Image (cartoon, each protein chain N blue to C red):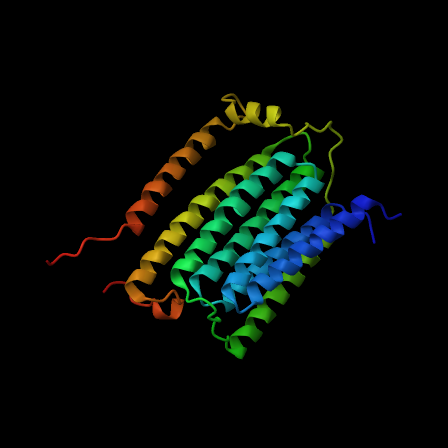
Length: 104
Length: 173
């Protein structure tokens, strides 16, 4: 076991990103796809924090990017869930295969 | 030399990755939400380990306390209890695993071939005092403008959610 450093955190971040991509490609339920997007956003946050900690510790830019990404992710999740609930009301299903008509 | 800090880091990393993987592969949607919760807690733990306490607190408050609860609510509203998600087609699964594995290998190859240069300058302590001062600053390097833009975005998202989720009145009596 090595002393953890920047590369270890980049490994975790990349692994989490591709776990999220796998979920996004295989899942067909809108809520689980939203969960995969949350995993992807979290991996990006982890990357920003790791670069800020190890490469630019005299600045705080990565930290602020992370804060703003968290705020935007919260807004995005709220809007997505409003859309999902509206879709469930009109189609009685939140499977993406059943939501193929643009207008009805 | 294995210190307690190293062991803690590997434990947190294992928790995050295992729960993340289970969250995208389990066929019970409620369990997927709970695994996502523990994965997010693991990431907050990594922020604590990196000594970014403010970000860790924000992560717990917003993700664990806000987004996961919202997701669990929407699961209750849209799913039948105890119903499993349908099985995936094998072909789609194989292609997804292939694409993800190739992407991951390519990314890690690039990361390990690249050498990062660390600076010799003295680090700024990431206390709440410093963060607040920087966020409210309007001179060069301050974040007052993005802060205002984000607050407008949050207001717009709130109104948008209410309008989208509003039940439309029946048109004919």
